[in-house]
Length: 283
Image (tube, rainbow, N blue to C red; front, side, top):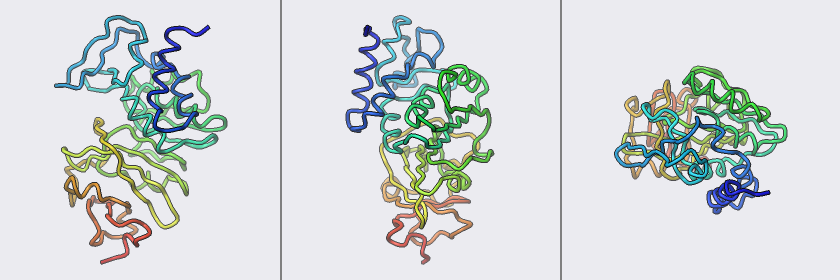
């Protein structure tokens, strides 16, 4: 028999995925209980104003089925992320059954579980988490799900397995070259791009035969990815307007920046030219 909580989760899933027309994504959000990846309530919900958190009035998990961030470690501002953003991102990378996913910055595993459901049957998800307490919690919370391995460590230093999807939940100015190289042909990587303190946006990278195409999406502000390149290391920083023109990304060791370079970092650079326009073809 359906319960009040079941109904709340069904509505939550329907609202989050209303623009995607992906019944598998809606079903994943409906099936995975958010409260199973959080400590016992009441919970601190991020109010979004001045870094304040507001405590839920009770430990009833129905409070969790809305588009809010829920604190995992309020002191460090580590949260169970915004469901609508993740619904959009998971929809953008469109996981298919049997695919291999590297989830970087997995926290306690709620969105890892959703990725697992989307890639079942036959898929694998490697969940990377640097915070020992979060990695430990994720191992316990993810026990009921198949094909998941939690790896405690720094994904910017660890080799990634060849991946159909790299799903990054920590902000960075540029992805490490080995992440790009780990993408299989047709592979997708989505990450929060922070080329400056003023700019935070989703970047969707797709690997093609001729290189890595990039599509810039909506706003995305995450805590920094420890070990990854940050804005202060840029050799060239884009303006807000320039950041919207990004169409491809290149590994500097394989191709030097040319006159289409909009954002340049020691090991990678972003171009305003698409792959079909001959991006990276020289000055």
